[in-house]
Length: 156
Image 1 (cartoon, rainbow, N blue to C red):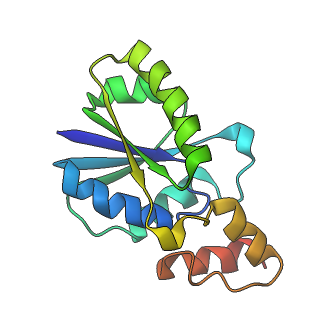
Image 2: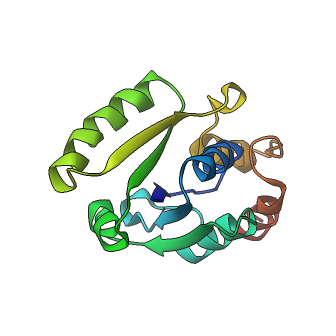
């Protein structure tokens, strides 16, 4: 069974890592699909974001790839059985619940699994991490250790 865990991951946070580690327990194989998301004006390039996730992963059952276009097209192409969505709060839940209906229009057999992040990461977002760093704050408790060098390169 194949699960896809999509996101912009700008940057990949400890909350994302929590969801990925739990997704591996559910599916035989997991694809972390890093979205190009041109409308989001990301801090890090798609290549950097893919590389960041790869550096944080040492599980042989996880593959990391970048993609652009519709997520449903990628899910069809990969023959995904599950879509993994991390949720931090009720706002995320309601948003993901509305998207689930759309996913099922395109892929009726797809199972959407919403995993609440560990409580200590429930308020952490990539946007928050970028803002803290931009203002000189310490982000070490929010991102995996291997991510810090990317901030040093991009934000000096």
